[in-house]
Image (cartoon, rainbow over all chains, first blue to last red; front, side, top):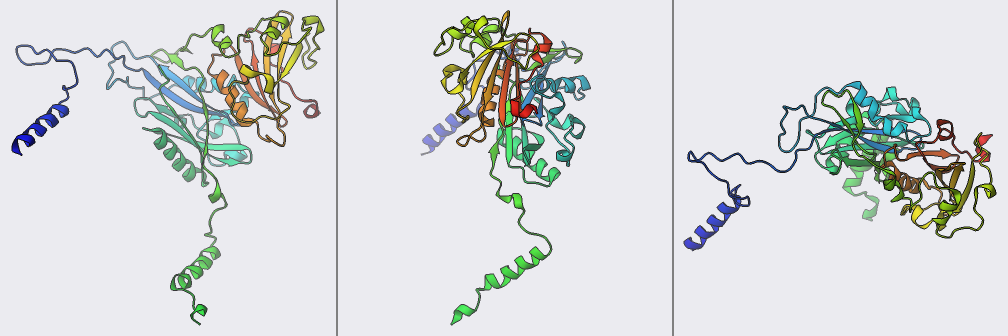
Length: 192
Length: 215
């Protein structure tokens, strides 16, 4: 039995070893690992916005990819996103909606203030809470309630599709004081 | 008979409900709302320099990306060429034989096909549309400049909005340098216009309204 136990322990140790599935790493004389180049390209920062056409309820994801500075390095395969996003990036985020709608005034950010249904205007929406950054979340979610024919929505960021929807629903229900059963979510990073 | 005595849970629960109702703490009217999925449309991403001064479309798309969706139809084709791409080409389609589209000030002509006979041009829409839905092809002298989906509701399909979103979603993924896809409503109809981005802005701006809505 003790021999079997030792064998099992050995297999478990091998499987748990981080290098067990990787190619052998060359060691120099001082036992310091050689530099191993990661061949998978790191993903640039993407800021994703949700914007809505208040007439048709069409909801668009506007993905704004930001090139890193030449001296920047990626962590865990992702470049960090800037903390301050200029207003021109937010303005551009509305463009996919504006160029595809019958009335450009109907395009607003997805995170809406309470009372939006009585004043459906972009000034009743917030760009900074309508966006998620790829270095902090994987999905951007939206949850809405229906006021007549119009969706009234709020936005949240999450690690998974379900978490983004749940957080958006929580935010919408607290902010709007309504049940928000209409939900959607999408990946922040576009497919490669 | 012990039936005259209410069970202990009811003795407490019913007065509690009455009390809550008296304070306005009743079940909200929206509690029966069903969960619904909201599809999110995915236009091509933009890319910015690291200072975020200049943004541009990330993807480079060409007319072939459009024709891959439209069963080979592209802007600039003459009426005869477009007709040749129809599932069942009509007889006698030529510029001079086409009726005028009177919503335009310019000399614009058109022909149309029924949506349910459009095969590949139905964009694999799974949701319903009304039986009278159709697709219009609009031409200026130099060729096709707009395709317009007009989805009509009827008793069997009172809400063609879901199908409109399915069709619109296919074209939203294309850059506006290739096609300008617009979705709007005209009365109860759902309209999706696909317009040549090189067409004159005066033509691009025209939106169709059914006669009853124009009043």
